[in-house]
Length: 266
Image (cartoon, rainbow, N blue to C red; front, side, top):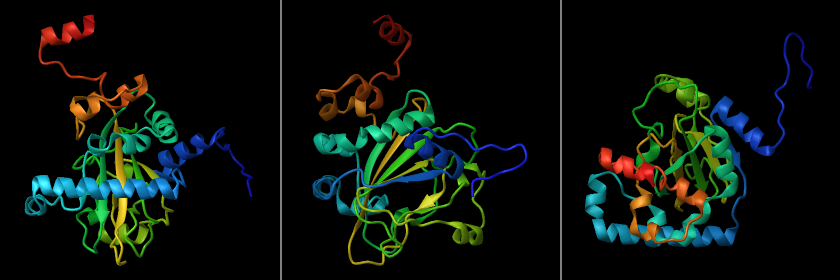
């Protein structure tokens, strides 16, 4: 039924993006299904494995374990720009982020998480602006978590605590476990959520890895995890004006007063 009485009226939604915006604003997340094909997924996963093996060799597996960063392939655009460009600049995702933040934003990170076990280090409740436990009336940051496998309860699909972007503090363990949602998400789909929404990885009880790629789009005054605009492998790419914006090329900090004025003069 779509009736109501009293001083009420339904919000008007004109496009599918409007519906996603409403879902994120009200409960903290939405799911957009099937944005890339199985062939594209296979290509992306192969690249992630190659990048992680390279990073593991360069940094050392023992050192990765010491900093609790095992099974994370980081800064993907640096290593395979052509493959991960399509995800970072997906037009549907960027249109949604733009509708949520309503002004300029930049890509703060792009990382792949390889969830192999029951006890993954992402399995603790957290926000993706860690340690910032406050309520804000505007969205500061938006995450787009791409599923490279079908997400399920059995393989540890992402757990979300709806509406928790409105909580100052972490609620009780009982409340959190009884009210979490762990949606079934088809491979190639994306969970888009307010970065202040409490979430965690589930326990992977299957025999296969579950791979996700996390993108975080932030307001430019928030410090990014990576300065994409200073990475040589990215700087040498041919980029559109909008891509330059998203990668932070137009939001450089100045070293001093002279540097600031010269940049403004140009």
